[in-house]
Image (tube, rainbow, N blue to C red; front, side, top):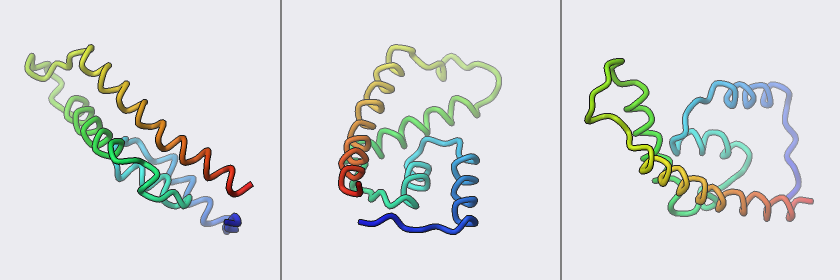
Length: 105
């Protein structure tokens, strides 16, 4: 598990990918961490569906009409609970990253 050398152009492309990312769906997660060698198994089984759901709701709400429709108003308590689930599941990825870092040192 030795670090892979990268050309400056590869690093520049990756930095642009990170800079241009503004999503939180699974494709964004995989797009950011995949090039670094993080396997899909590092995300656990719950994080990806949670991010998909979270991202869809965020997008639906953010990109909807500028007029507020009462049926589209998000319940703060429900969204807080959903956010806590996502943060908890990010712990799975964090744990993988910590273990992987120990292996490559």
